[in-house]
Image (cartoon, protein in one colour):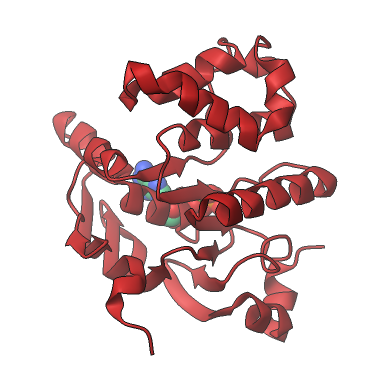
Length: 255
Ligand SMILES: Nc1ncnc2c1ncn2[C@@H]1O[C@H](COP(=O)(O)OP(=O)(O)OP(=O)(O)O)[C@@H](O)[C@H]1O
Ligand SMILES: [Mg+2]
């Protein structure tokens, strides 16, 4: 049994409400340093809410909603990062600690070119270090180098997703959160991207949490997986255990 010093991220009995609707229901999970952990769930299962709660984006949303006097977001339970409780910490402070979120649906700036997008993503990075960080992103996604001056909106879906992940990597995160990075990509591009993500994890020892609707493309690469439905955990296991599970195969393998 390994000690708790190996645990990078712990989510404990998390509950997230939007107004009266429960999006995350008593969810707990653990991510060890260096692992790649999958969160698999169908539409509306709570994947994005979980990612936003780990990255802190939900705190921003909550503050904005409250200013408008509108919808109330409630977060209960704990998010613990390297032993520190960060449940109510703002996303900016979490980013400074090395938590980076790549949001769902390729969140890039379509009017700006690839290089400009990377610079925008590096707003937290010291000026003197920015070039090195941009080179770091280009090294991980060499396909982007020749597209440096291409407007991001003109890139293919796969290229946009590479750029989005490159942008998240600009802060040299220790914990990378990827929310449905494979969404809308063809199987061939999906496997290319999966390979790139696996290399990032291996080469720079980055800890990764990846969410997906379909289990098949990610199960072979994850160390551990959590299946969620209606904000609740329904199954957990190693990638291999989940892959061999008939329930997982019938519900999350798609067609
Ligand atoms: N801003 C919001 N206000 C109200 N309800 C929300 C909000 N965001 C999400 N929800 C609800 O919370 C539940 C979880 O949504 P969430 O977006 O986290 O799921 P998801 O697994 O990411 O879904 P998808 O596969 O569509 O991306 C859903 O029932 C959704 O309708
Ligand atoms: Mg989502």
